Amino acid sequence: MAKPDNRSDNVERLQEIVQNTQAKLETSKDYIQAHGSQMNEEDLQQMKAKNERRAYSLEGLREEIKDEASYQGMR
Image (cartoon, rainbow, N blue to C red; front, top):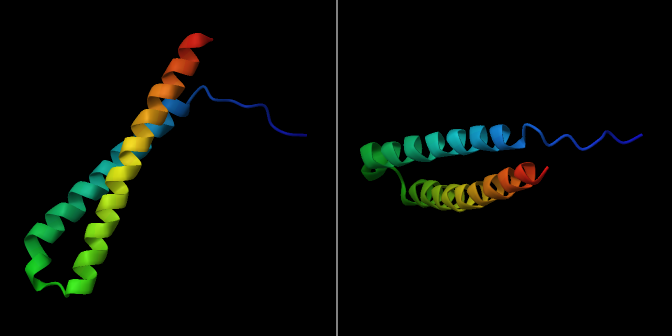
């Protein structure tokens, strides 16, 4: 039998994911700033691309938090 849909902690879990992703993004940016000139071009471009994906994910996660908070407010 399927488990009931328990969304009571979704906002908190999503906020934690946002915080972790933001921390990884900032750490990576700092690393690029400090060591980017010493990195080979392929690795540098891969890190920059990953940061772009992280930034895009953050936008989506923040929208999901808004939607989830709105859903929980309707109950």
